[in-house]
Length: 118
Length: 118
Image (cartoon, rainbow over all chains, first blue to last red; front, side):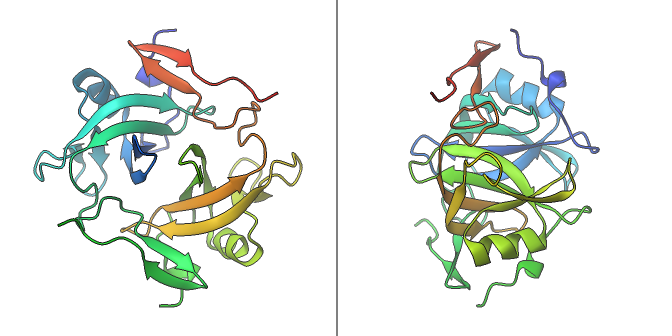
């Protein structure tokens, strides 16, 4: 079946959550896409989100150089969430860490488990 | 720093997306939690979502037996998304597949890449 981004289920703002995971299995980040961002990501191979704060397309790495190249896009059973397998250049997080999920809850305490990349 | 679920950033419905990943790195599903679901998940070690369709707590596996046991909860840099490392008994997906992300986009076509579990 040919894939049509308009068949995904978007929220009231027209957005769908998109999880980025690298080939090692590490979950790097979660951000949002609209239908046009989904289409652009597939067409260009450059992962493109919709920035809710700036209200504009956000080609990941365009300013930072920390590019995400799409390996494969996957759709979940409810068609309301995307998983993107990506090749991530450098850190995915704005804190310069590989992943945005660098804080763990251990023994009811917040613990930073990942250092910024050199 | 002691972790307080009320310090997370919830959407206008009081919900935060929660990604479940098993120890092999496979992303199993994404669902939603409210602050009480976050607290219950940490207290009980049984991953507990908020069902938006049923408007009730959803202790994963309570009816299906496909329990998710929490290994570690992680918080992202913006405090608006959770990653849960879990031990998943059986399939995470209601289609009986290990993961909800069983459809890939390959050459612009939707392709089912995972069979239901026996």
